Length: 97
Image 1 (cartoon, rainbow, N blue to C red):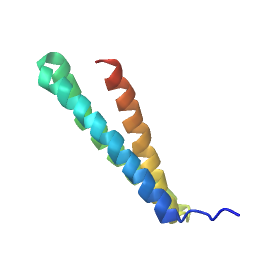
Image 2 (image 1 turned 30 degrees about the vertical axis):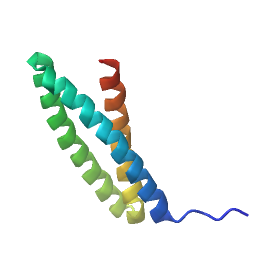
Image 3 (image 1 turned 30 degrees about the horizontal axis):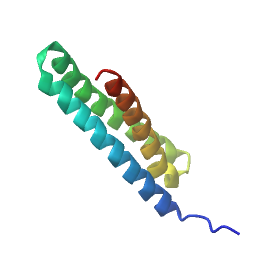
Image 4 (image 1 turned 60 degrees about the vertical axis):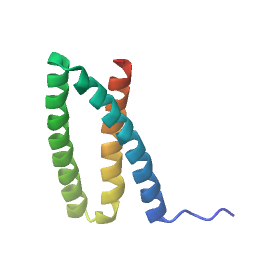
């Protein structure tokens, strides 16, 4: 019988994978910003707007989990939220190279 992975190990693994993907997005954004021009200005504004929106969504999801009595789900839900956003940015920025 296979031993079930500890919840903290799953969260830690997800955080590592998210960090690696986020580094790639940062590199792609830096390339875009270094090119300058209107595209760089748009990307800089989009980056700030996305960070604010993601933080607000993560906070509202955390509050919703607490109110529903599922506070233990907050780390996994937060990682999932950020992972989806990073994946979208990675796809979008990779297509523009």
